[in-house]
Length: 113
Length: 113
Image 1 (cartoon, each protein chain N blue to C red):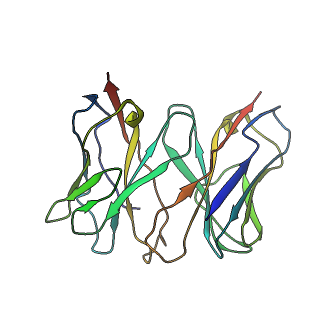
Image 2 (image 1 turned 30 degrees about the horizontal axis):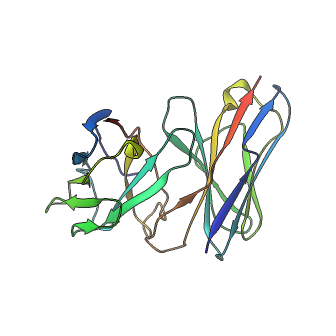
């Protein structure tokens, strides 16, 4: 399974932008970059995903490096409800792993009021 | 719309007792189904993966087994629980061969005493 590297923890103040980095230097051409987040005692929640181009949705933006070896999840204005563990995952729906999601340790985001 | 049901929410079982956790999905057909476990303070570990009825792939050797008796039903079982089986168990589903997100249930908190 493909590997990603994320910082263990990050902090932000409320209403400030947050940039969560992820390194995936061994990414293959068919791997999509997915982000999930998990609040305490809940199942993970999908945030966003992309392949090559930057992506935006109502929750966040995903900036993907030109060589695809790293990406950044951007929360434009952090709220207290954004405090969670954020997971960066590589997913290949047609490769040997058939789209299975392998979670790492993720980044614990703390948001201060 | 699609929904995923997982029960029970919490469970306390003695060592050596059997286990049966059930997960059902509504509103979709032929989904990929997953069982994950999260030990306290740890990341999510993929336990089992299923692409169809009766088709189960085990990711790690363990004291647990999984079955898929119906298209949208996924069951996690054990004949004799160990203390190390304690954790937060999550069921998830995704569309087959599509690069969409996975959807997680609310989880079962299992404590083996």
